[in-house]
Image (tube, rainbow, N blue to C red; front, side):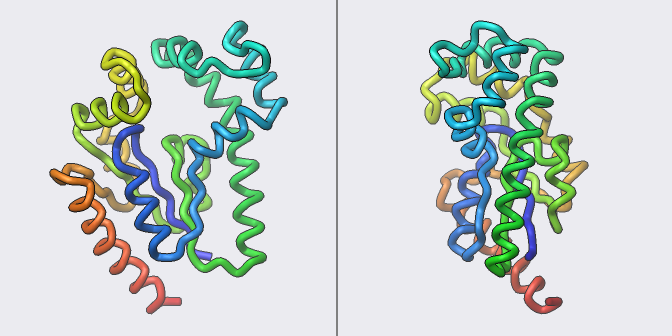
Length: 202
């Protein structure tokens, strides 16, 4: 199974990249969506979050904005949260990958903001960074999540800069096209070439 790692900050355009990979028949793991599902189903993870950040869980439900205000303004708090959540997410990713291998899936993709830091990048055959200008990311986060500009900028500031992905990934897709359709076409051309080369060497 050929595994493609997709990483980049929130609002960078990773969802578009994943959509294109699905068009090519890849099985996709969106670690952000996986994490949010686990916040509703994994009581052990919620318990650890509550123990470290008392008060952010009310009646068994995580107040994500309350937690965000804490961790996006405190580097140590964010590191502590990541240490808890990465462990649970990595376990679930490994379970899915093992299942797909048994099903003879040929191409899989893992999308994670902390793909490299969490160790998930070590499972991948190629690492692709997705970047976008900061102002574009802030606008996308505001529109997508319905949050204030201040909160969106706090989220962006708490994440790795574009230079991190340029330095640590095998290649970079920059989501700076005027329209999402134009970026989607660029991604299609990129993966057509990549998967063609993969098939030739298989």
